[in-house]
Image (cartoon, rainbow, N blue to C red; front, side, top):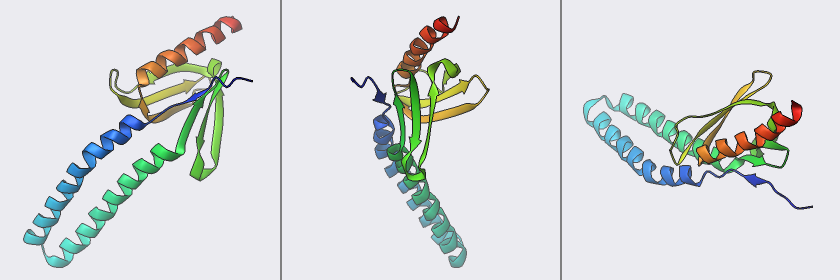
Length: 148
């Protein structure tokens, strides 16, 4: 049986992270410098440890999400799985009522999907979200015509 499915990619978000993280780290270094020069030492050290932990958590969280959150589109449905949480769910294309893109024309963005039962969920940092939205709408239309 031929596999017609494909998975979304998040390479453009990862490329963006590679470009942006050095600036964020530089801003953190500037904050460190000003905290050490202007504030009391104990406050400065506690604040810097807190900011450093937040920065590391943010970067780690983005990378973990990009690498472990898998969305696979198949012939009749699509599935969402998060590897490190052992979470998996699937939806039929006919169950989709609305498909929205956070910012049209951007290299990566968020897809917000709404199902018939009113459940909204987002798929974040998707490469070429406009193309995937168009593809989903094309998959959804034949399903709606079959139901009518």
